[in-house]
Amino acid sequence: MSTQAADPATGGKTTVITFGTFDVFHVGHLRVIERARAFGDRLVVGVSADELNLRKKGRLPVFSQGERLEIVAALRAVDEVFVEESLEQKRQYVLDHGAAVLVMGDDWVGRFDELKDICRVEYLPRTPAISTTALIEKIASNP
Ligand code: C2G
Image (cartoon, rainbow, N blue to C red; front, side):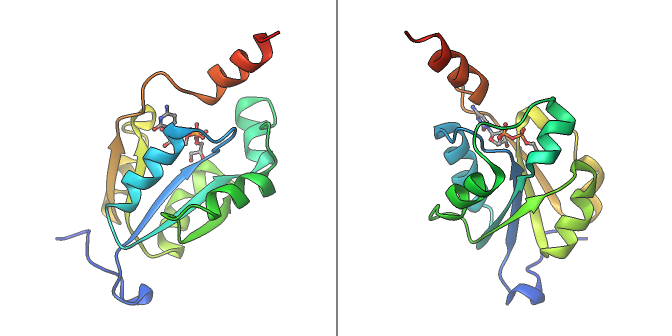
């Protein structure tokens, strides 16, 4: 059975979905988004809610949810954005958006394999040597 069929609900286009916080937006974020887009015809991005970050990471992002959504929505590779309220709702988000492919960086490898019954799941290598945490530390330690 093919899990990569174009969804008639999206005009026959193959929809790709990806998720992230995208805080202090950097080139690693850009590259995963551009590579995700290359798996289909349109890209939908779930941007994690401030509340989700507080719950899962114990801190709020530097940039608010509204600002992070605005930045991601402005990218050429991105067709649609929405707020990801919960990590556990991935299956519903994939179905709601008619996504045929879910793409995540390989720090999440294996974590979403259970969704392979409804979509193709791809984990892409992270861009080395850059992260939001490292950037925050670098900025904070600069006199
Ligand atoms: N990424 C990357 N290379 C980096 C840093 C990040 O490819 N150097 C990718 C991550 O693997 C992820 C995306 O960029 O696919 C967004 O990363 P984060 O903002 O750190 O997202 P995260 O907090 O891991 O996502 O459902 C997932 C949640 O939304 C949380």
